Image (cartoon, rainbow, N blue to C red; front, side, top):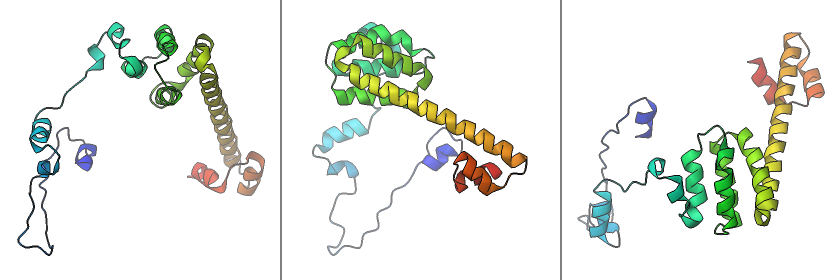
Length: 194
């Protein structure tokens, strides 16, 4: 099904499951309906035989999301993750973190989601500001902001080294000399040469 979607189709194909049985008991003694394997087959049929429940956070007002207790911050961030400026959520996130309904692990998960799914450049200042406003979680937030900053610096340095190596290759420098000067690995340099 995944390959079908990756090929550009928008609807799933029907996949026919076929069970080949070669067990000791014969004939095949078990149910052929996978829903019968649940603790409550009737409820499983109701759940998996109908449309799934939907929680469309895009239409839930932010004020209502703020009352979702320990899930409020994650829900709010998920709703607004495509926003260019995550700082717009600063007041709401600070208020939610001050309520102390989120564990350190949840906060780390929230920030990691923001980094992976959002614009990291807009998240770093947000973390510094949150760390100042919410002293209880300040150390965790500052540490993550500093790690994000270091990653950005390292990425910038690495990209600069790649540019230098590319120019050196164009001017005919020896690969060994380029690796010694830039500190790039043989694999990294070979990728540039392709």
